Image 1 (cartoon, one colour):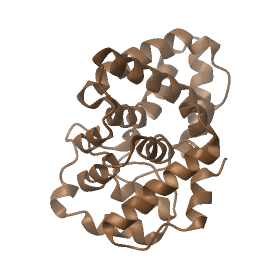
Image 2 (cartoon, one colour):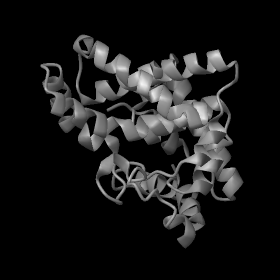
Image 3 (tube, helix red, strand yellow):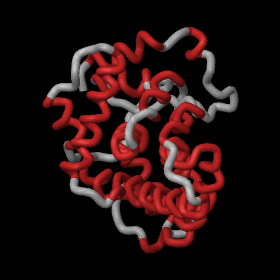
Length: 234
């Protein structure tokens, strides 16, 4: 990603938007305060919590829920809008039911839960006989995760209504690719598995999405290096 795209997002962040976060704390990613953090930073803690939860530790399951729910809710909200919480309730029932069958680490758990959440969202949309509405993203304001790099600027800036509205205006494949990579925190191959696509296709979708955002913001285009970053695996 170019610094220019995310710097422009940052400039769009007004004092009013800074104060628009939910007072109940749901606008704070993972419940760890205002500083945006990358979801992968918690993979070790998440993996350990899942392992304990599979042995019947309810407190550990609550930890796993706390670590992945904010990103999943934001992603599903981009698909089904105001029905996201109901959809995620169904998703978590399935996650709890099938937890013993899950095999993998923290990163794998994020991908597994994202797949379940997406399936439940698509089922909901089929019942509603409507198409996914990425534009619903503007309905929520979140602090998103990010490392100490240009991703930091991406996550911090994307917590504004304006940035979410821009992402919501992308074609569905591009919006989902950006959301899974940036909001849920999946690497390229994991995001591809959730979407049932090749990693290269997801990388291209995310790359094109960022190019569209750059054009809308009137800043430098996304570079080839950014394309590689979006598709890289852990």
